[in-house]
Image (cartoon, rainbow, N blue to C red; front, side):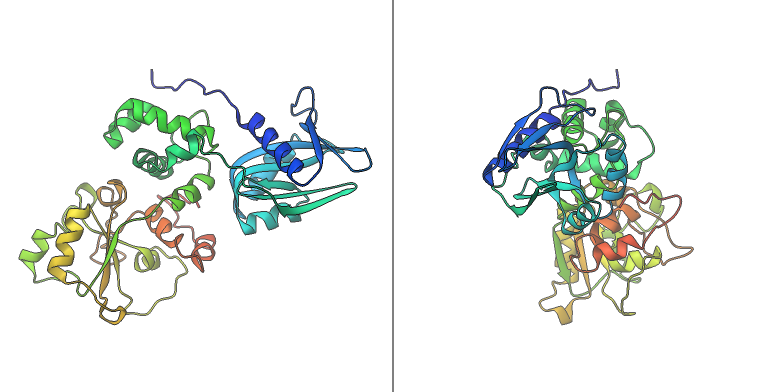
Length: 354
């Protein structure tokens, strides 16, 4: 059977307990209601004058400026009148907090900040960090979870079963089941294994840390022996494994609004660390920024170099990494990365999942 059994949902209960702990940390009393459901409040906060403030709790793994509008639409459909809506999340980005504030929502970032705004109460303060390393947080950092997240984001509109994913990733079905359960408990995939977009993308970006080296030269025509040793894979690009152009230069070919010089050093993914070490040895290490001709990165997942895009007709002779992996690289730029991704949609046949 290709379906996973439904995992028990503990998110709501854990979130309520976390909120009560946070409220108590700022010197207020709080208690659960008899039956916290979508039809009644989950928590009653006791104000200094004895009145109570009813709070309805929603949960998320991650809230960002991009994810907040869709999340708020879903949550608001079951919001109650005269009840303070509050989201408890493992992580809420700075711009995600601004979106929640602007929408009149209270929130608890489990990394250590509570904001509750309601009649007779205004709290906006740091609290002890409440995140606990549960299964979802432990599991995502593993290689199987990273590979699975990439596979799901490459096919965000297709349901991928356990056996199908196991075959695609050359992993044991039990490993896939465990990783899916962890992602589901973190609200990063649903019961049908469909990815939560863009939450899963940004969570994957947090774990996207390829090993890289700057080199003093890059492969070029006329270096037949070197190019063969480096396994460039310039023939039958979409059915072979080889180097893939990524980051800024690749993003420009895909139409992303990046600015760069004509001689911007290219970034390449190579299949593994063995090829990376061989490339540095043959092409020479760049000892200073001025001598950097390019950057070589070991692909974090095999799909990067096994599912390349042949852009010969519209880009250049270099095979391109799939836009998903290019976007993950752009997301590492704390300055303009998110701004560029907000304005970039690569269009069909690719998927905009950020």
